View 1 (cartoon, rainbow, N blue to C red):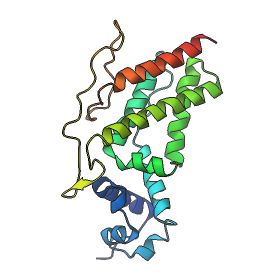
View 2 (view 1 turned 30 degrees about the vertical axis):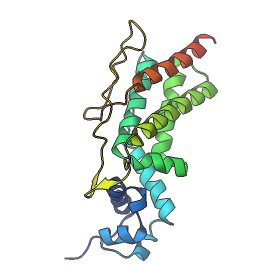
View 3 (view 1 turned 90 degrees about the horizontal axis):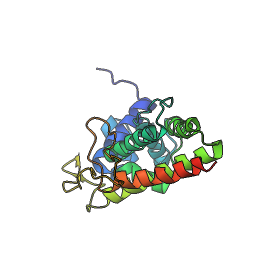
View 4 (view 1 turned 90 degrees about the vertical axis):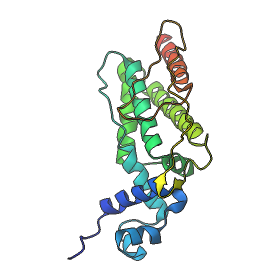
Length: 217
């Protein structure tokens, strides 16, 4: 049977599978080529090098973060959904945190996410520069929280018997109220991992600061 032609999408999806199972250290052009039944040289028709492949894989999985409707009345709830969706994506692909630290992720999916995130704050009344800073601050918080959770257990980015290692002793979802009278029960995608302890309180505190800045204008 004739082998299907190698495509960029096939290369990127296979790279994501390797990264999910073996982490950043486990991805090599030779390893990926063997997985695809192709030579490493054949891969260079589709990507420039390993770094380019990781960038494409990172942008690919960034597209998994669902984008809520910007037109809702409660901008804070929308911001929480966006943050939690990104956190869930980082939990599914822990290597992405490492990739972001090594090189900025750029591509259509990342741009779409960033533009949508900024639009959440613009719809709330933030000026463009304020919305840009707000989106950056929240994304940085989520990345930091995901990094802390991923490094809480040694080997969190590595694999065990070919399957991604998950944090067996991860803290339970933060369900305690940070502020009396306000629930911090987060909106989390169905099937998403538990959120780290203190994550929701920290996110609400950050949004409090952003809201106070908005009220002052």
